[in-house]
Image 1 (spheres, one colour):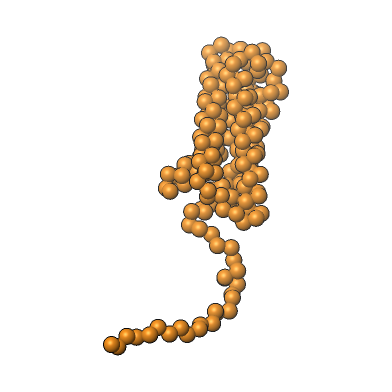
Image 2 (image 1 turned 120 degrees about the vertical axis):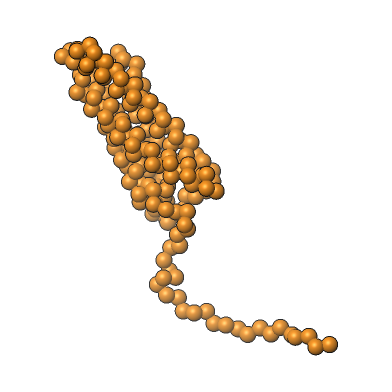
Length: 177
């Protein structure tokens, strides 16, 4: 009976090069996802515009008299806190070169982004409707803060435009698993 016998020959490892020392990035880690620089930039702009909309609306003396404006303050406040918290998570992930592609984390990010962006969009739409009513239909901008109302509404829409890509990236990442 002729049977071949396996023999083991040791092979040396090739010397390490600079390419081998670079951090490995998975294909799932595309720019705009949590833990990337573009993701951090999106979070920063979400926070910036939501906080600006909140501050502009809160500095007017008569915003509490309109429910839509109170809703805008609440929604942009929530958007600001959510974006700031996730920006800190992104900064940590970037500093330690950690991927945030855990299924539970991505689910949390997608649900949170979906809820906060929907609330911000609804509040901006409601505030825009009231602003148009006050300005165009009632012609009572002389006794109201129409410029501040319009500015705050526009900033809330811009915050929503910055929040929408974050939601879409997270939802896409969750759906592609």
